[in-house]
Image 1 (tube, rainbow, N blue to C red):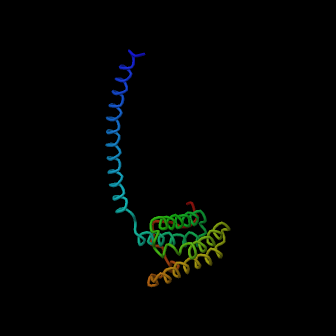
Image 2 (spheres, helix red, strand yellow):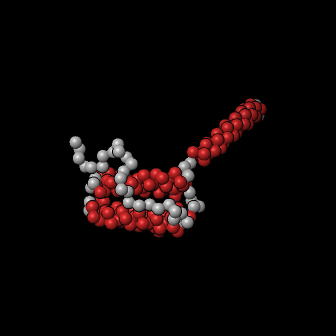
Image 3 (cartoon, rainbow, N blue to C red):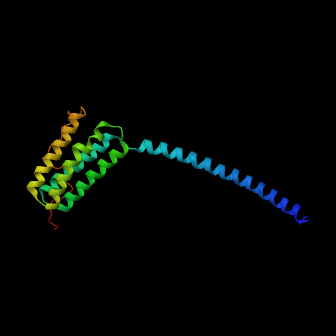
Length: 170
């Protein structure tokens, strides 16, 4: 056993030296990944849409939703309603401190839920009524947050001449 003790000690010392080198290499990799992560965070923060851009997206889908429902194109109406909800959730995730976003739960979601029911029932009259309710909810939210100069209304015409909102497949 005494003969093996120096060999075991030597193996142990070599292994410890290799571990120390490996630890330095790993620490260098961690530092490089942290620097890369910081760069990505900066990039993402510059790419993040502002609330104004998100509201413009909401306005686009609000418009398209109206024409889809008016034409009783229920699959398209459901799609546009889903797009509204997706953008609203994105706004909630990005703009966590904005008072406008904090009002979505009490002012906008109930109107969207009512509209959802009308779409599911495929009831054009109920859809129209609930769409007006959603539009009024948007305006009430704007008013509550001192953006009442930004008035939303039921669209009179679509700015999308390249989209057919009818259900005709011809």
